[in-house]
Length: 428
Image (cartoon, rainbow, N blue to C red; front, side, top):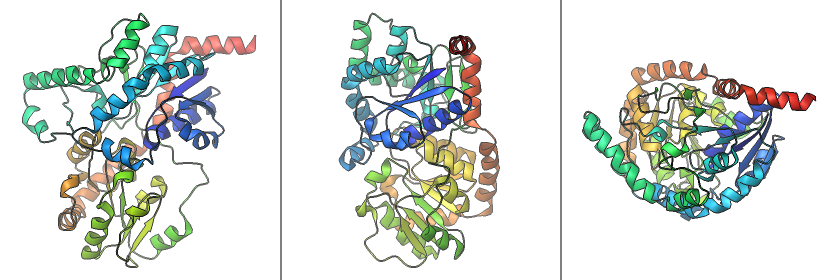
């Protein structure tokens, strides 16, 4: 099959789909990645076909990222920013799927379901985190009020009311999507953020089953596959400087803010360096390519600051990781089997953090509370046998899930007739 895979967002939103595309190609299909022009070289270095779609999103825009990482208004800002671009996205995706047998969508590619429905094109939807299902039976943590979860979750009636309220409120943010749907003469399938993003044929939940299990109000056709990992070209490894540092002493604590929040780090790295220095621990700071993220004071020989490092190579060699719980970063940390301190900012991160905490592998500090003394106390509590043992148990489960294989199996099983039809066309 010729399969168009569309995504928008940060590298964490693109990497799983590159991993999916590589497995599809290995099976003989022809995947096409349709995303922002910003990622063209990143995609094409794997020899994958690329198609640009609007809007153009620059994950290195620090002003934009700072606003999007606001716990109170970040998610609303994101959707209000994407809504007016839906017509451009629709035009681009319509061109991208010419000759395609299947479309695979991302949670915020709001034009993609409209394209599939208008053209009668088979499509599979994906989610990267359990919060996308917005279940009243597995109530998500809402970024503006994480404290609300424990107060409400015990009451099914109140949970359903809260989910219904969030549904109505968030739909107002995407009026342009509903307007385009009506102009195209397509039926109303619900909120573009919630029900309408899910395919009637196949919904791929690209997260570990340790984070969420199917609920009564999930779509009936969900397959929890496990996460899909992509860490760059296979030959990429750790820089010599980092290898030397790791070999020179005990496992360090790794500090990272993933691929989005790192552009709005604030004092995260400064406070982190102070905390590990006070603890007498070694540390690696993944600061991104932002000079402002480097601590102002000189670092001791026990702390190394580098721009980037493959998480799959570094995290298993850490004593613990401190991160923001973006979907991709969290899955990498879970797979590494090391305990974690989580500093959730916005969007799915507070919910992801809560789920990791419930697993017994993590502790949580809110960004406003992330100061040397609190970080030092949390890390001291984290680095004990209980968290290490549980993290190792969860890591072994996640490493066995084989998300790319499971997702491709589900795609081929669900769209078997399309595979057969495509094969017949290629051999005739």
